[in-house]
Image 1 (cartoon, one colour):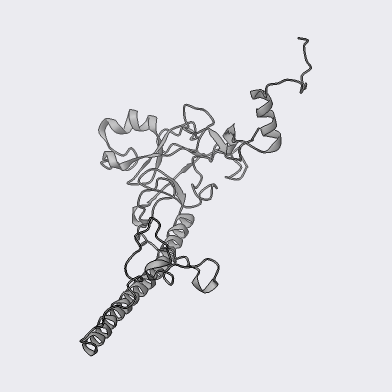
Image 2 (cartoon, rainbow, N blue to C red):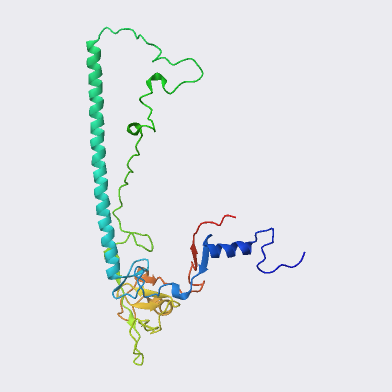
Length: 293
């Protein structure tokens, strides 16, 4: 067989390369691409706004937020809970009214039946037994046994069954962290104090600077590639190397001489560097319709 050209369509097999090429050009099939350094937030950016924090606060799990953004998030969630709770209470009230009405109707039905029996003490024999006794034939009609009025008809609008209203579950009053999914309380937020890099020759604004902050103890430049931690007592940000080599020796704060516990050292969650050794998820996937061949 002679050698074909690159874009030859005479092949009898739809190859993987052709399928992948057609999927990319047509917009079908799940596409994945590797995230670069510019696709992830910096370590000093808010997890909600993805912008540098003006008033940074941190949770117990180490997620950094801007104070205004996280408070707005908590207030929004509480308002949403109040709205859902009102709808749930309205539903409970309607259920109680419906149950009470059903009970009253059942009581009235039994009372009417009792009165009718008392009026007709001597009952007559049933003249037409065919309506109550099912036929002995193999097939039982849906119209027999007086079920004609019970079965709805999809052709008559008045007898068409209607869908029931969706049930509302009781809302949860807790506010959960948008990053960790754990319960979040405003009083548990810890103020963070970054130490600015003092470089008189750098006249750029704080946001435009590449090296903005440094370790409060060792003055090492902080970045996504440098693991950091927040000291809960003062809110100072230090490197994990400083924690391991200096702080954990005697568990005393180097700046304030306060006694520290293990819970006072909160590792700061990093945004990402673009390297697989730092990040867990570097692949971004977009689910699209499959290409049918």
